[in-house]
Length: 311
Image (cartoon, rainbow, N blue to C red; front, side):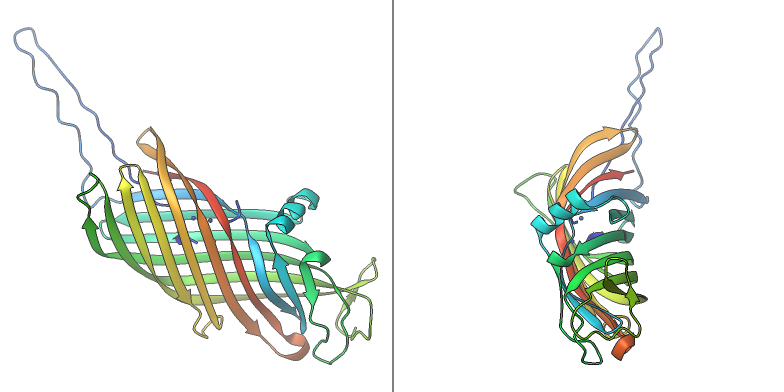
């Protein structure tokens, strides 16, 4: 979804709902008297509709990551990301694949938001905290590499809907939803060889740096609200937000998304629309202690842009 639609931020690259219809008719005539055109077939009100949205997320990062007890602060702004795009080897060091899928029938909808992200940060975007779990100086951060997969699965129910008399075809609906957001993540932290470094569990690299690598997976329950507003036929807005974790997977997580969708083409019973928005996803997860501690306390946010097909 992006957020959740979607959600959610793409960004980065934030977001996601469209409507469609079909029409047709036939006309026949005999030599004596013309007949009326056949009525256009209409879709049952409770029929399932489906949508798919591949999208890009310009993903900016703020927070910290702890790998084997070594904590690295992360700060990636838009300029940093543009430098990464210019310098990185794609797809080895920089890759993002995202997609949002939804099925709706009446007031019920089921949706999934999938994100795969690989990003390698250099020392300009990271900074070590100074000491590790044994109170030894770890040296300056030389870089951090992330690889992660995030899968959000949820069910939504429309609790209320109201129309507008100002613009024909406009209206607003409010959904409640609940589900799960599953994470798989791997982080590789590189530390400069300086100071009094505890090297017992670190790996020496050819460039005289030290590296630590760890991975983690967890699942967060989540609950949220989604507002869908139709400005006019073919133009709509979606805003959603959710909270999750509650100490079951992560300590706490939240996601927010806002996006505008515009229908631009109808082809073979499929409506195509463009989506532009902003998505933010934050999580505070940790496990282990001392030199086995892994922690990911980061907010990912940025613009999202995508194309939606609905049938």
